[in-house]
Image (tube, rainbow, N blue to C red; front, side, top):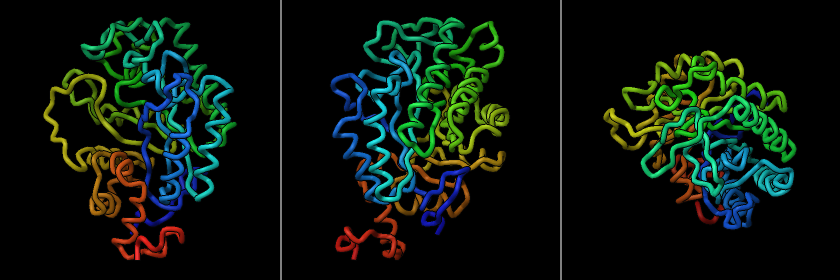
Length: 336
């Protein structure tokens, strides 16, 4: 079964196809962005559970870009040491580990006095109207991504993920709903992402993952066909597409939220492009996970909530499909 098969993406060699997607844990209670004992235990447990690829939660490339004040940061060299400990823990058990670099833009709820967006348009009712980014500030944020990549590289991460989904700043630039600028960043809504990719790649030659909201599910926004056209422009510079959806505005198209409801987006992108995809979206059972891969809807499967519930999800799958040889010795007694 493909779930048990290794896969190589660029230089990233994974022992299996199970991915832990980035999920904010909001455990930085000192608001200083440093890795805590919680993070060390949290990610280490999933590596002990044999997850092939662990993607560390959204990590702010600049202060005002954190999703909340309780998130990890990577805009100081002082953050490198703690992040490198997460890498070491993953590698101890043969897992590979990536970090998601993000700027939350107008969706930030951090304590910073100013939050930015491509245009001065509010995201949701409970959030303030953002300050429209000047060209100078756009260039500064692109530089922040570059420096974040440099620090992540020093920490030893195997891959980087750019967060271009869920209504955060890159997504905001891509959407005609949140980006009504009249300058080059409005005329070419892909430009901000392209310049971030270029900046990041100038600092490393490792595997680069792009997380996207493939469809906004809103008649005024973009759909999966528009996203495919965007991806064609950057496909040569990215190695894997992590396919999610929504998050920028409230949907006005019907969505049936059920197990695997986003998998069709991964399938469509995988069949239109030559780039591996990661499927995600309420994939909670062993059957759901295996079926995505066996039916070639994606190259890897990310299971967020289920890996929060059960850090040994992969071992559970191995037992169900009679691959007890994949269960590490320290857990053998639990899976006889």
